[in-house]
Amino acid sequence: MPLIDPIALSSCTPRELLAAYESVLVELRRREIVRTNDAPLGQWAEWLARRVLGGTLERNSSKSHDLVTPKGRRVQVKARLVRDLKRREDRQLSVFRSFEFDECLVLLFDPEYSVRRAAVLPSALVQEHAKFRKHVNGAVLFATNEVLDLGGDLTDQFQSHPD
Image 1: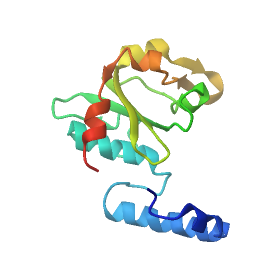
Image 2: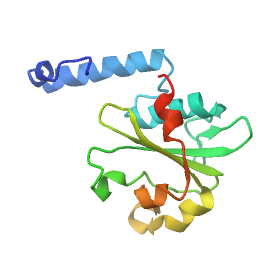
Image 3: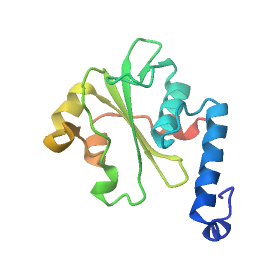
């Protein structure tokens, strides 16, 4: 159940909604869940990855990976909010510009920011299924069930982990 009544939100002005969003980001930063003022989904995913897998988050400017596990595995974290599981477009991950990681953790979220699906894919598998797109100067991967099924399923670990 949402903390904020959706009907109450519908009566807010755009400025009021943006101010509320800013307040939420400030609180998420105070709790050290997000580290920048960017949209929080990716940072929420990285925070959850660290909580579930352990290890250390890299600096925000690191292009090849986001997390180093206690066993030294370099993990790239990709997150996507999926509103419609049947729409392939809803499963397009952000661009890969480097494959200098050991594993890619894919986290698919529902609109309430709960993990729908979590899978870990070896770098070679990501390279095999991602397609280079010149206009974004990188490779794009669609996190379809067929691709995610080729990796390790971590959904239960992420769904059972307390926030």
